[in-house]
Amino acid sequence: MVNYILYAIMVILLSWSFYKDRRKTLQALIKAWKAFENILPEFMGVLILLGIMLALMDPHTISALIGKESGWTGTILAAFVGSVTLMPAVIAFPTAAVLLNNGAGYMQIAALISTLMMVGVVTLPMEIRYLGAKVAIARNLMALGFSFLVALIIAKVVG
Image (cartoon, rainbow, N blue to C red; front, side):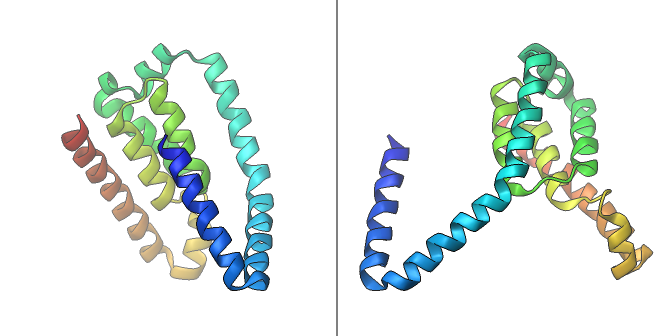
């Protein structure tokens, strides 16, 4: 029901924007469509990979690897995967929801998402080139530490 209410609000606000300035609203819709087109191939790729992973791994396996019962071992595994994966937030959060629905733990997903957003092993060479080795490594290590802190806080709040 909440989704229908949000869609109704969106239609009302879009209609109001269209009434106020038709040209700007159309420009915004075209920009949004182009952004969607840019994200779609990446999003579809992750959805396909996630579908294959879910077909190969049942919820019990996901729960064993990064479920609540996996504890810090699962959290470290999730943080490692998040650190070496390059994924935008628009794809990461739906992926996290799917993993949660299939047995992943909140602490582990918090580590996964926070390392996805903040730690960049893949982008480290570029960071070193622009920021210098000391700053880039320090930033990534602090982000990794903060990710574990976030996971611990989520575990205390939710778990």
